[in-house]
View 1 (tube, helix red, strand yellow):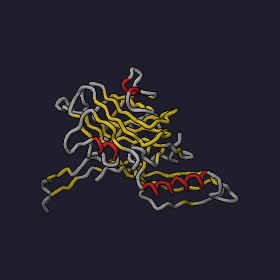
View 2: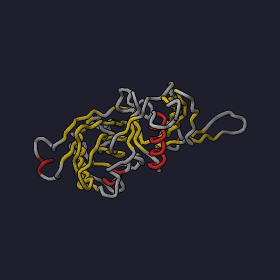
View 3: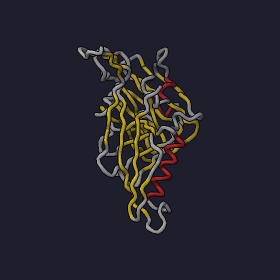
Length: 272
C-alpha cells in the first residue's frame, strides 16, 4: 500500500478563517486549531458536553483528506457544507457528515485520526464533538485539539521498500555527577516520531526519471521541500498513525536500470 501525503493545509491558508467556535479560553483560542504543526498550542473548549468548531475555507474546495491532530477526545463528526447557517443546524448536520473514532497513535501516544473524504467540495468544515469523557484523565474539564488538516491527497508509487526504523525521540536532559552514582532527569517536552526508510522505485532503463516511478518520487520530494511540512499517513490500516512531518534528507538516489534506491528520513513536526 502506498503512503498518503497532503502538501497544503487549506485550513491554514490565508483565505481560511475560524467562522465560529462554541467555546474557547484565553491563550487557547480557536485559531490555534489552524496550525496542526504546533500541536502543543491547542484550542481548548472548557466543557465536556457538546462543542464545535466551524472553519470557512474562503471558497468551495476539493478536500481528499481531513486529519485530527493531538486530540483529547475519542469521537467526533467531520462535516462539510456550502453554507454555514441553516444547513449545519439541520438534522442532517450539513451536506457531508462522517462520524469518526479517534484512537491512540502507538508511536507518539497522541490521539490522532486521518479521514479520507470522498466527494467533499464545500466551503465550510465543521468539527462537532459530542459529550464524552476526555481521554487524558478524569480530571480534565475541557476538550483540547492540537490542530486540523484538510487538503488534497497525493499517493506515493509504493510504500517503504524495507521495514522502516521508527524512533521515538524523548526530549530530556540528564544531570549526573562524575562518579555516576545517580542521575537526575528533566523532561523537556513530548515524544517526537522519526522515521528512517529505504525507497525503491521502478525505473525506465533507457531514460531514468522520465515518466517512470522515479520521476514521480522526485516530484513528491520537490513538493516536500516546497511545503516544508506536510501531512503523512502510513496507510497501513491504523488511522491514528498520521503526523505532520518534515523531510530531513538531501534527496539521493542510486539509479540503476529497472530499479533505483533512495532514502527518506522524516521527523514529526511538533512546534514551536
